[in-house]
Amino acid sequence: MSTALAIAGVTAVLRDLLNDGLVNRNISGVVGTSVTVSVLAPDRVVAEGGTEASQLNLFLYAVTPNQGWRNEGLPTRDSTGRTRLANAPLALDLHYLLSAYSGGDLHAEILLGYAMQLLHETPVLTREAIRTALNPSPLVAPDLPPALRALADAGLAEQLEMVKLTPQYLNNEEMSKLWTATQSTMRPSMAYQASVVLIESQRPARTPLPVLTRGRVTATGREAGVVVQPTLEPDVPLLAAVRPPLGQPVAGIGDAVALHGTRLEGTARSVLLVNDRFDIALERPVLPPQLPDRPATTVAAFSLAGQQDALPAGLYRATLRLTRPDALGVDRALQSNPLLFTLAPQINNLPQTVARAGDGSATLTIAFTPALRTGQRATLVVGAREVAPLAAGATPTSLQFRIADAAAGVHLVRLRIDGIDSPIVDMDYEAPALPSFLNRTVEVT
Image 1 (tube, rainbow, N blue to C red):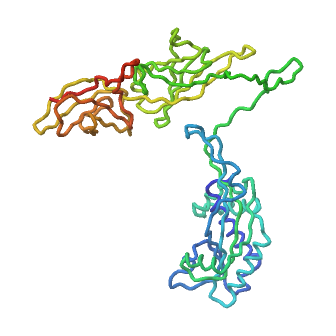
Image 2: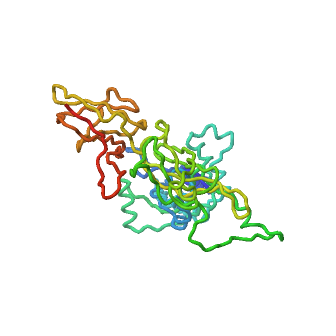
Image 3: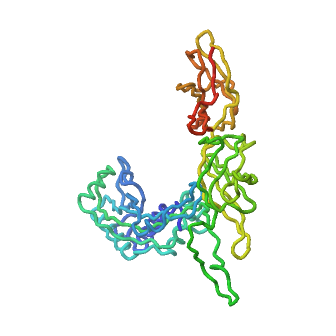
């Protein structure tokens, strides 16, 4: 595959091909003047107030996706969006406008005729021609501009499919629009398509290991293949729910979070916690089973104690990892499906009482866990009113808030970090009781 330099590489090869063709056919002797090949936009070929010289100009006026390769391979990533699973090529067709310029009679027609014949006889840019054009000799290379020296690394000669040249016949309307868009005077021209350029990323991708055998190898040396046993019970651990303690929909630092599912038994059990935003992948051991509430087959609990610096508030994926012997008694590592859960902030210094200042405002300090990370936005919701923190006195685990025109009385308080509120409702109740608010209050006097 080629690199991003391949587009410029194709233009450079075509220019070199045209230039060599004009020299080999002694076109300068035919028209009686020197002839050059440029790769400029049409409005830059003839300088304002300058004399029009005899030359050919190759202008890349459009780039379109190649229809044959477009759906060959789609860009694929894993569920986090960070790891590449494949490097699909960017397949492009290049559209060129070949124009002839000259101040002499019939010179433009002569140049265009020779150029069209040359491209007609060269329908494919061979690998040898590409290497010759883009890999100059060591004697010439030091004198070339940096851009031309860089084209040696385009990889155009090594790409899977060679570049083919096809004439394109533009009607009068299309040609008129093209020259009008370039704000130039129309010259004798012919359009060509160069197809295909395959640009592939050089970034690493995840590649699975090869399969060694298809099932158990029998005494005769044959593979048993895949054994299918119809059942509603999965063979691998399957998670169905994440349940923080006390009936809360969110977890907090210090909580023991339970993962519920089926076939969760095994050895070396651990839970992988992944946060994509902060690129966190933390493994926590599974707590010992506690009967009858936490049987190992259906529940795997892990603790968030002491993780206030490692795990910021946000969304996490929890995946259970364990080891279990297979039908042959060989231990194999298994991994469950991931489930999302929310780690919410917790306020540590409520309830509290604050006094109003002379201007009617009230200032309070909120201490919380987990620690605030760079880029996270924190606000305090006092009753139904949202208050931004003060810049002064802020630390990763405490913020100051000034409530303007604070009303006297007791107010329920929630700390909101990136849209996630600290718990404020007591969900640990049984019918016929009703939910109530926790004592997360501030009294303004």
